Length: 113
Image 1: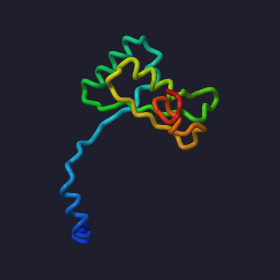
Image 2: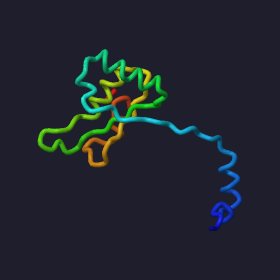
Image 3: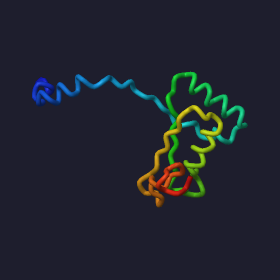
């Protein structure tokens, strides 16, 4: 088996060696029905997640709402961030969404602040 690193230009190998190592970040999607619980129970769950070393919670928009099923990921992300304001929320905005990511609240160029 050949050594692929040896085939790379010296500048690529040297550049990689000079960069600091970045620790992996671990996130999770919340369980279905989490926001249907009591707000204190949901907040306690998020505190357990944070204490366990999970770096962030992931949320995504459900785009089909087939048969009346689905959820609004932006509303979910907002609710979770209100229940645990220090645990970062990573929101996945699907490419098929009619609203661009530049229109997210908090983006100074969107006018939605």
